[in-house]
Length: 261
Image 1: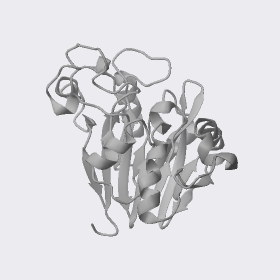
Image 2 (image 1 turned 135 degrees about the horizontal axis):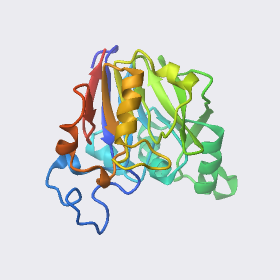
Image 3 (image 1 turned 90 degrees about the vertical axis):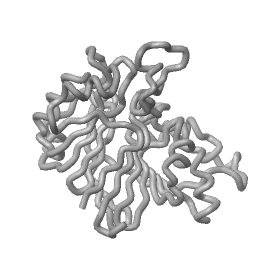
């Protein structure tokens, strides 16, 4: 991989329950098309000699094994919901292999939630050699930050009333769990080559963009290409839905790889 090439792997494209959903026998959950099998939403990217994951959901271990992520330099967290943080404990093999803590970047609200959920990581009275080791860095919507030579711009979206951070790196941006985006934050999403953004299902939802709203948002932001993620089994089959979309908009699928220079 060239130093100036960014390789993005979409490691999960599903909503909080994943697809198939436990106990469901709908046409999507019983589909034999691998593109209809969706782990919880996450991406991994390699850029400028850094290996970075966005969110460690319940499928984090499985995703890292499936996509052969042998090195991890940092984790970016979008927000504190369990389908985005529940796999944090599985950074431990990277601690052992790399012999150092993993850097995590998150808002103060997310960090408070991690302290509650993972008290044994942060409370000294629980300390013992086998717990995950992290270095935490505070981030917010107003300030860019660096991971090595990789500059990252946070973008705040609202998941109903909950602030969620998306991230822009050069002309690529990743947004999940958005329902609304304020005008000032939308300005950060202009002139993109690739945008990944959530689209839960066809029907209206209180805290997620639905299919029509996501398409409308993409057309407003006007990236060259866009991919839809955080998808429910209620969206319909991958191939059938994708066939109805504008040419520059695709349904993302687990394992999709995007290369940018």
